[in-house]
Image 1 (cartoon, rainbow, N blue to C red):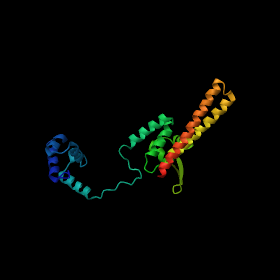
Image 2 (image 1 turned 60 degrees about the horizontal axis):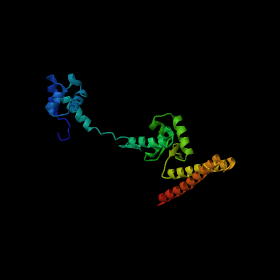
Image 3 (image 1 turned 90 degrees about the vertical axis):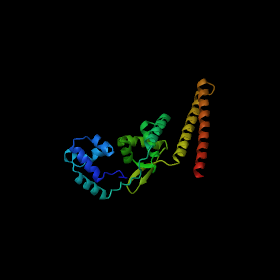
Image 4 (image 1 turned 30 degrees about the vertical axis):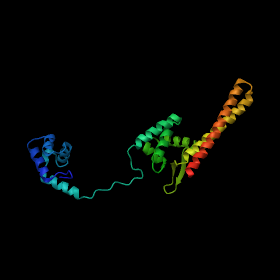
Length: 228
């Protein structure tokens, strides 16, 4: 048949082939059907010793009349490439200095359409312990890489990423650079700017102060692009 389904005549030939002691491969060649189709047909209808063409055909017609259940709707339908993207992003984040668990959590959030998951959902998706997720989200929150929202309907917190996480991350990095610059400046004063150690600390202070200024400027340019 055009749709690939077995006909009554097909099933009669299957029954005849079985009666002759033929294997599934030989029957499939006679019918011009895949061997897997023949084996599935026979096994679901009594096996080689109990296969009856008429009963098998009626069973197939009954199955065809039954309404097919619709798959349960899911907020995040799996898509091709999502696992590869998540793994690649995790590797880059680990190389940047994040712990592997924190990198996995951030990557998982980034590749979800909703951009937000509860701790329980992260545990289920990553197949790790709740303690591992708790430690990771704490690290990411300190670095301003994720946010937290309260889902009042489910009375749970959701950890979220949005287009502004990188803006907040840049600002957090700028504050870090500014703090290093200030500590280095104080160190240069304490050690004496004329000493080799003091001069080294002064150069360190100037470097991080400049990096901090440029980071803030980059964050503001990025924020401007988001507002366009």
